[in-house]
Image: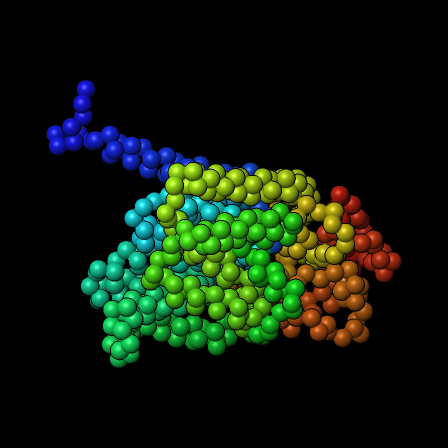
Amino acid sequence: MLVRADMGEASPDQLAETRSRLLIWAAHLGLLVLTLVPVLSVEMAPLVDLPNHLARWHVLARLETEPLLQQSYRTISHLSPYLLVDLVTAPLVEIFGVYDAGRIFVAANMALIYVGVIAIHRALFTHFTLWPALALPVLYNHAFLWGFLNFYFGTALMLLCLGIWLRVQHWPVRTRIALLFAQCVLLYFAHILVLGLYGLVLFMHAFSIALRCHGRNLRVILTQIAPIAAPFLVMFAAFLVWFASDDVIGDKITKYGKPEEKLMAFLSPTLATEGFSDVVIFLALLGIAMVLLKRRMLRLAESMALPLIAVTVLCVAMPTQLLGVYGIDFRFPPILALLGVATTQPQAMSRMPRSALALAICLLVAGRAMTLWEPYQRADREFVEFRAAMAQLPDGARVLSSFDYVNGRMAMPLRSYWHWGSVAIIEANAFVPLLFTGVTQLRPTELTRDIDAPCGPIIQTPDVENGLDPDFIEPTIDFCGRFYWSEWPKTFDYLVRVNPVGLPDSFTPHVIDLESHGFFEVVRLRD
């Protein structure tokens, strides 16, 4: 039977196009699910700061009903730029429990970032292909490994906001500015750095369009882009007021990193385990882009050229630490890579190269998931053992945690275990220092203020030994001015040593009992 398009029925070409689109969407969904498997298959993803975030969520959810937590922690009310994650995760913790809430939140963030990439791509290009899936390996990046959940969540929101903004270019100016103000408020309470990056991208995008429409008439160009500034100026003024207040506790140092740190920043879009596979994934992504560029088969959305150049300059210029916030230089390159994928589109391809590109993308996504499966599973087995030991601690115990940098016997990079001691807060309502009490709504009470630190690296065995000496001068390393472990046997009930190197003789007089596990020790202390 002949199908006639003029009778309201779809033509064979239309049916083929519909099937093609459905296959592409199905491929995107399948590759996203494959990407999420490593995170969804473990109880807690081995991300550096994630245990601290989970412990903070636990305290916020249980503080009103747990007297033991009330002795150690309290909350304050302030308009912190980092409140949104706590507000979003609160119902998740209540419904699913803290570990499942963490797993859901991390996976949802990854999915939202991918949706944001697709939203930007669809706003810029009419023809939809598998190309945006090239962003999936970048979801496992160095900022992700560090567990910067507020920044990661802000990245997802920023990409979604940009995708929406590119869709509403025909709206009246006042309506668009009202929408932009709402977006700025949302991003402010997610992460201030993401808000700043969004402002840079939007300004350069508007400048690019105005430049094409009005030539070099600077007055007209400024008139066109000036309305965008108002929402950002309001939110940055709010940030300056908050940042100068007494609510912000911690150092406000800015410093550039060492050459090796800059190399890590360059590789950060795929640096998820700090292993050789990360470099292979990075080179594969770079290789695909370079081949297409060399053959002039990659089209960049014209209005996004200046934003990409601006973000590239920003990535090069960023210090390692900015006003006390660590890891600035490796947070932005992954976003640059995501924007690079979202704002480009392969073109002028015959069927064979197009199929080869699709196969390469699928293999790359599958390869990223496979390289993460084994270390994530090993880390999960380690975590199950550690969590069981923390559950044996008495309720309300005060726990000092240390970590030693020794051989690579652990499943993940050593820093992934820094904050595992915070699990004691979840399992035993314990008190543990370094719970990000500097810029969040959580604070120590008067009883625990002197043995808490709102920031700083985890202490090592030599640091713990120094804490036994009452005459030892406070260390110069940054703990926000807190020598919180001074004479620690008098102020803590337990010492949890992760990846320990022996037990110094000086500890022996203070030990009641010691439980040794595969990669950690739980030491019960006497005063």
